[in-house]
Image (tube, rainbow, N blue to C red; front, side, top):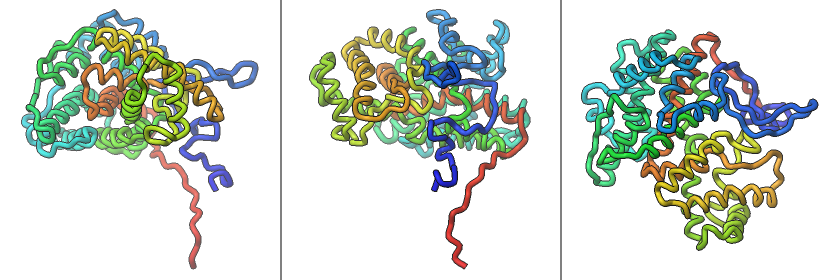
Length: 417
């Protein structure tokens, strides 16, 4: 019936192209080029406010943390001058706190292994502490967004520590953030009992946050942000709804599936460097004979990108650097072999309409594991980054249109009278 009535299932056509539902000046994704009138797949490109994400990351110093600078770019539309960046960092540090007793009364009150649910509850409760919670003016919404951007790492880490204390009977650790440190550095400081981390660890995490910060207006959680904003709802409800979208395993939980798959592969392969052995097991995965028997090699392929995911291309350098520092060369070799062999195996067993390549989720779980970040925080890590993109899209929606988003559904019900 979807075909009969020309309905775009999932708001995408048969080629995977999304239904055009809005305009944005925040970011762009390019996966194909038109050459001689024909659409031809190309290596993926991700643009933030007119800058390629690779160029933004490469413009940073070897030890420079760039999350705050790129967050400013996405929110304000322009690269910050030195004084503007310093002021922005000062504001982020100033609001990187929670209301008095909030950790005790809200986060620790009902700990949950589902950190996303814990964060959603906290976000909605924060509205009770805001005298202008329902003021959806652009200036007030921007204030609220900046505050949530700063608070997200606290909500995630404190939520995890509360769960770890309550469910796993571990020690309760609550470190206050350091106003002199970046978001990535503060995350590691607050997570670890000894507060210690290396420059490489912080730099790799900072890069991961930048790469996950924004990804076009058509992804599920960003579209959710636009839809809720268009209804006139407040910032807290809007971001909570985006979080609810992100926690879905088809959206933000992909790196956890990659990690579970990799654990299964390690358990069944004796030599990670033996490409023939690796390929045979990948064939078993595709034939639905191994792991979850769904026939998928997780971390391979993307709804938009075909030849390559630009985020994965950038990230791989930092993954290799961290793996060498951590002495994880053997595991790295396994990942590299799968990256090389998986597209070949998939092409041999499936009809491929566009290229298959590793996406950013293929490596992100490996990075988080090397950083000793527990799996309960993996999707929350995504949220800590993507809150910036959501905020930019909320502001753009408020500025550019006052129409509520209301798609049409055709009724095919049987009339009974």
